[in-house]
Image (cartoon, rainbow, N blue to C red):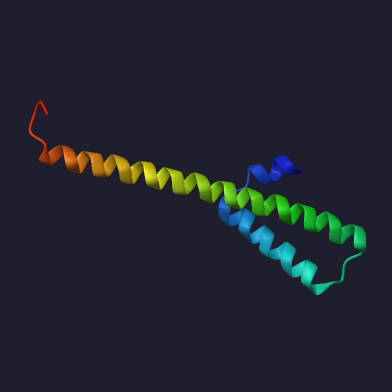
Length: 79
């Protein structure tokens, strides 16, 4: 069950997390179902956080590369 979560894109994982929260808030589930859904929600939330962290790192790396490229335009050759 964890493997299917890791394959989800951020948007699908977030939608599944929202659905799990709504189902838990409704309170119509048996205790065992609630616990299983809560555990899945935790895994979904962790996956979403990991995807966001990776995206943030990628943006930082792109920004740094862009800054270095712009700085290179102002440096004289050989410096």
